[in-house]
Length: 114
Length: 113
Image (cartoon, rainbow over all chains, first blue to last red; front, side, top):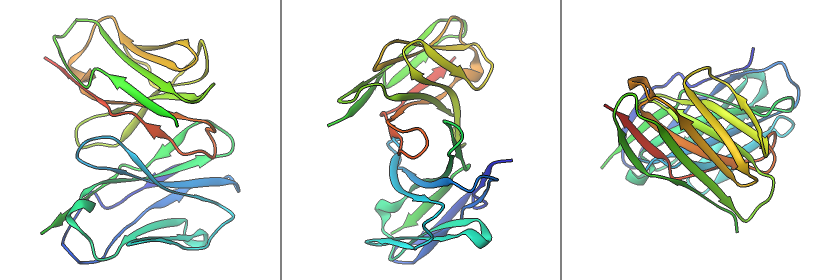
């Protein structure tokens, strides 16, 4: 079965702390794609990153970094030196080569306190 | 550049009334289109997706329906709303359903009273 688990329902940290959002996935496909989306309070989801199953290199974009580990089926997202504007719900998602759907995690609500 | 718009942004409707949410995409052709619903404090639930005009796939049996009368137009409808239809509805599109990122509309918040 295909599944995405974001075990952390809500995380609250103080500004400037580092925070990691966990994502664990299940799939039988060898070709798949993993995504992270951000949903700020305004509601519109914003694409953050896509990673295919053959590329395990970690990626860094400014204060954001992603750690993809096939051995543990995880695609974790770390925000360094968090800011209040990072407060949002973050979704991890899985796309398989064999169908048209994204499989979504339940989301992690991140609260950054000033 | 491509844009996606959906409307209305906010809607308050009585139980039993009809619903029509509209979504249009500009700047691309033959997009894959999606309707999602997000209940308060919960994740995304795929309702419908469409790979072309007149082609609609339903993921959740319910009293909602979707139509795609034109290539870049996707409509979510209901003949009689239920209280449980309340939620945040998001339209999205992508060029490549398997590898492409989804681009979301602004969302439509529906409250059924």
